[in-house]
Length: 435
Image 1 (cartoon, helix red, strand yellow):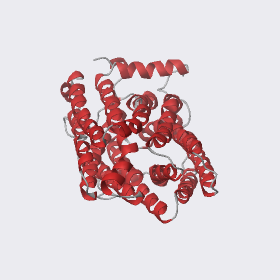
Image 2 (image 1 turned 120 degrees about the horizontal axis):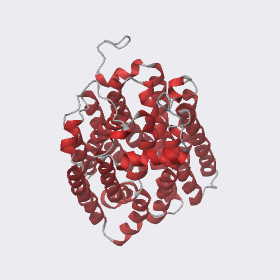
Image 3 (image 1 turned 60 degrees about the vertical axis):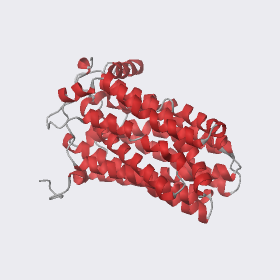
Image 4 (image 1 turned 45 degrees about the vertical axis):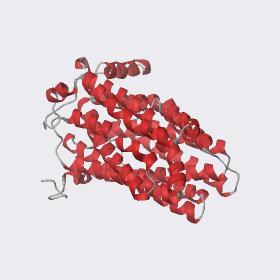
């Protein structure tokens, strides 16, 4: 039994570690700010007279920033202090949001300002997430990683997709989008102040196994790509994610506000609370997964829950009540949370530690590679065809592709050969990455 947390539930055990508590405190405030941006950005675009096409441009800029730098961010996480990367990203986010807030409050903001800000937000995420993924296994013992992933998976949707959007919706409705953006800047300031107290631990900066020399940047990237391509469960999950993201991210991010207005007669506050339902679902799925042992068929659970969990999106275009739409989004959130916790633990337990930053960045790059296209297409398609058709396609594509990925990677056999519930399970060496 752990000192300081007697009889602690499984999901709370990582909080016995001081640096983890510090990191999570900063993450809570920062992610809350990112959740506010999702709503503040939409209604700042609308206030400037923008429609679906203009919103697509601004939303796409964030995805482009992420994709443009995520591979660089992964290499950096395996070569540079992960602590310094995280602190630097928070400082940059504070600068960007403070600038946009001043422009918006003074009436000088333009659409291109929002697009640039979105691009920089995406670029910051490209460095933050690989560094966070690589830092966590150095900060916590292996037996606490599932709980930590579950806690992050619980807090992130609650804050980024629920509390943050709901708060921003209320601020926008009561004041203006500019005031919501000022609140985002305050969040990043608070997170930066907390992060400055993170310990300077050598383990957070160690990147190579003993006796290995640092290869070139190109060799680093080649090693990560080679491992990913030669590992079937990893490769096919990422291919599944590419198609899934293309089919539903654009409709959710760009077209859902118009569903709210056209079918529900709602406003910014309604949109914020619907995103909150999606986020709460993700939190419920994450917390439930973290609080229970992983099923032996963890790959099957992950791919099928992710795939068939998108089916409720097919009904989005046919509902005209708030609670109906909120329920659909809640279910999608639950299934997404379950899959994400299993996936995060899978990477940390089966990928060699010295490659975790690069593989995590490749995960982001490959799975989100079509996000800009999805964002860019959603607006024009939403104007050309009825919205219900777009959401039906979004709901049915993922289950089909999920089954294909499960069969092609032979996941049923792989999960039995590599049980994650074994206490002594270790990451697979790169030399054994073949089928």
